[in-house]
Each structure stands twice: as structure tokens, then as C-alpha cells.
Length: 201
Image (cartoon, rainbow, N blue to C red; front, side, top):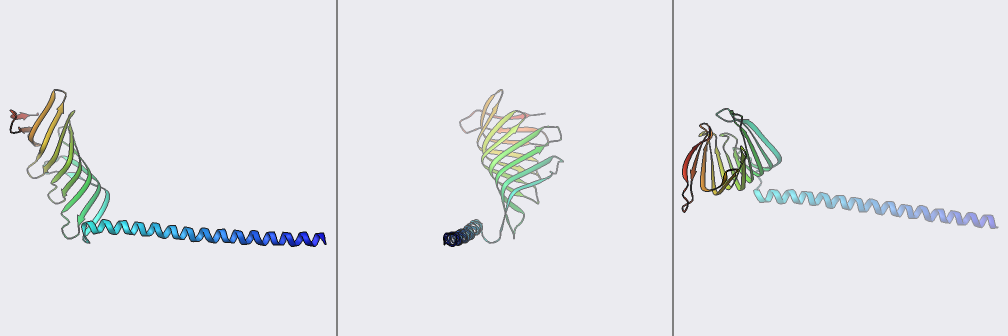
């Protein structure tokens, strides 16, 4: 009698264990599927929100890089954390988190950083906006706008221009850097006294 009773208890315990295990597995699967669906819905929603900002004809890219030679034979690399290209007008690329490096034939190097930028992939012209920072031969430059013209071979820097150098600091309204002739034209602020032309060769 005791042996049969023990067997029955063991059978009941085993049945309850299997039933409990089945419930746990089933609950886990439902929970996992629900979480997966939430993640998929969130990702789809984020993509749709991103596209809605810029319209249906916009392609969005991440960590994009352009490189090549300008018309004067100087090598450049242009990188962007995020880029937006219009499918209809593919000539212009809007950028965020921009870094440009210019390797000049004389061995010098110019680095430009900006929060936003615009690249023309036909003319190779570049524009940099918002918290622009440039580094050239140990000098650091800060501004809100910089424009690189490939055709005219110059770099125009404007809007609250500050140059920090070992020799001191310079505040200007606009700097025009002639890349081909290594010439720098400085236009002063209205109340300043600087208005000069420097030969950087």
C-alpha cells in the first residue's frame, strides 16, 4: 500500500512539474514574440518618422565618405555621419557631423569639422555650417560658415571668425584663402582695424 501511494505521489509530482515547465516555456515564447514585435514596430516607426521629415524622395545614408582630386590636383576626403540625398536632384548631398581633409600638393593638410554640410558631387564644391572648426599648420580657426569652391580654388570662411595661433588671436569678418596661390585675404569686422593680404608661401 505504501509503495503504491509513493508511486502515485511521484506520478502526480512529475505531472505537475511537466505542466509547470510547459506553462513557463509557453509564457516565455509569447513574451519573446511580443518583444520582437515591439522592436520591429519601433524600428519601422523610427524609419517612417525619419523619412517623413525629409519626404518620400530622400535617401538616408550613414557614415558616408567621398574622396578624390580637386581641379588643382589636391586630394581630399569628405566624411559624414549622416547624409541625405534627393532621388530627383542627386547632385546635392546634405550632411550632418562633417569632417573634410584636404591634402595639398605642398605637403600641408587642412582639416575642417562642422555640424552640417552640403556637397555638390558634380562641381565638388563644399559648404560647412554651424560650429565650423578648421586646423591648418598648427593654427585653429572657428566660424559658423565655410565655403570651398573647387572651380575658383578658394576657401571662404565667414560669420564670427576667430583664429587662434601661437602668435596670438585674430577676429575677422571674413577670410578668403586662395589655395592655388597660398594667399590669405583678411576682411576685418566693421569696428576693427585689420584688412590685409598675407602670402603664406
